[in-house]
Length: 281
Image (cartoon, rainbow, N blue to C red; front, side, top):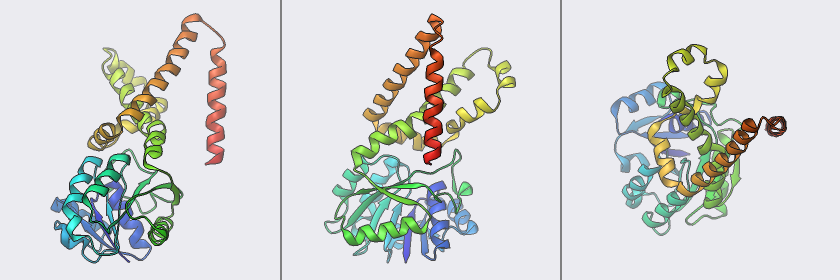
């Protein structure tokens, strides 16, 4: 199988490594020559260039692994060159806008299936790519333009080949759910860093910060552009998640202010809920 991957950062590079290990021929696209060279050196692609039509020629699967807002231009630019019978997919963290762009720009008979592997690292770029990144993760699949039984099987086979578990849902449901379990944690991490570094006592705090601060702020090391695009394409679900979090935080604030020992109940429930989730994972 020939797979074209447009965008060779952490996810695109890891996808290339995993698919090559599974026996696929992987053709990569990168705008910057140094990224193309790094992808070749790392073994993430069989060949790589900066010509979109050449990249997707003869591809059975076309994976768009760019930041969300860049997907719109990629879809518009590849539309006339998508091979007959090819499946176009993506790996973005938001889906409503992406499926809308696919419906608008891709040719009438083209097939699009939205994708989002629930895996990643706090670091980005081809140097961070990992052949096992998707091993055991949930891989969201969102039916799009001309989705059918044949394209379903082919996409599921790809997901399983890289070690992930396919999970189907609609675009709006996806964006609402990930706002709470993926996008909100990132924003909390960013807000905590900003709160601490803006404190005039930060230089002393930094000497005391240990594993708790490190683990809680890990996501703040993520790709800023990707994070920006997520916020711009999933506004309402993220705002709803922030409001719900603020309500929970305000309740904790009230209990602390009142010196209410019932605050322990919140800690107990949170610990039990997290441990139950870990057991299920």
